[in-house]
Amino acid sequence: MPFIQSHGLSYYYQIHGSGPTLVLLHGFTGSTANWVELIRPFSERFRVLLLDLPGHGRTASPTDPERYTMERVSRDLLAIFEALQLSDISLLGYSMGGRLAIYIACKHPTSFKKLIIESASPGLASRSERRLRVKSDTHLANEIARDGIPAFIERWQKLPLFASQQQLPLERRQRLHKQRLNNSALGLANSLRGMGTGRQPSLWTELGSLQLPVLILAGEEDAKFTGIATRMAAELPRASLEIVPGAGHNIHLEKPQLFTDIVTGYLNRAREAVPS
Image 1 (cartoon, rainbow, N blue to C red):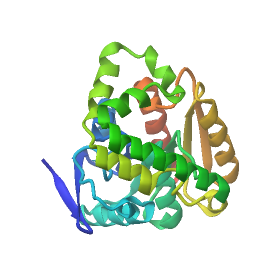
Image 2 (image 1 turned 45 degrees about the vertical axis):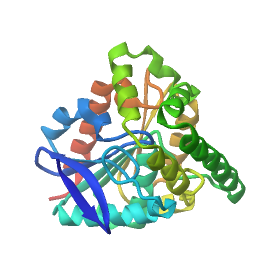
Image 3 (image 1 turned 180 degrees about the vertical axis):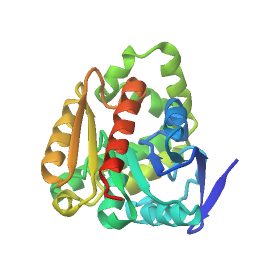
């Protein structure tokens, strides 16, 4: 079972395939297991790196919430990329992983070739919004610590954000439920406290200076993130926007083949456009 240490924290990871590197960053309550249907098609064209983020899956769950901040985790990831001798890196992040991908790309733009954002945002624009969200995230974190993972996941899966997933086959929903249960209460609670949306620095004002090619994906049934995606595309100098029909918040779960085709097509086109 492959683990790698980064600044004293043990990360679980997998590498598949060869070629230019594609890093996949999962969302809150997720893990490397969320990408299982995409590994084979992506690894036929790319060297695919999957990681469990702090507090998730098999990666360690530190007791200090400050160890989960975007600044600290970004530093970890850059060290991991260097230790694994990765090059020609494109970042793909979903939801929380998408927020992290935006952050690390804005702070370290020369480290990456392309950025792909699925159902994510560059943060809340105002301090008052962030303060309210920190309060909300802290309350939810305390509930997780108090009530445990099964009770939290039962409530989490019923959020309107995930309503479109009720149309998925039972087997796929059961697999997702089982994966979510394989997280720790400490890890998820501290992930919210350290990397929740309220703790994320607002990056809206930094988008205009990000010169990376960026693909922004949102599901047409996810009105909130379709709106955010449209706003982001207007701010980024080299953005491509895809609103995916028939999908909600988790496009790669709900429409895996379409998602793979869109991402692979974009990466191949972006690669061909770079002068030799």
